[in-house]
Length: 69
Image (tube, rainbow, N blue to C red):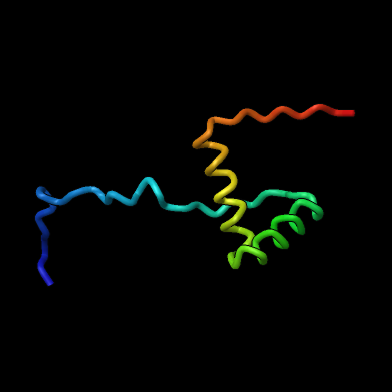
């Protein structure tokens, strides 16, 4: 192993923007069940489905509108 390495010609990771970060959030049980059932029908994990849904919201620049009854 070398004592020093030259990284002057190194490139940044092109996938660094796509890295995921683990977060803890509190979600209603009926919402989790909805995503679990929907994900099972699609053959994917519900965590990936939630991520896809949220990513789609970001890409579409959707704003949350919630009316309380």
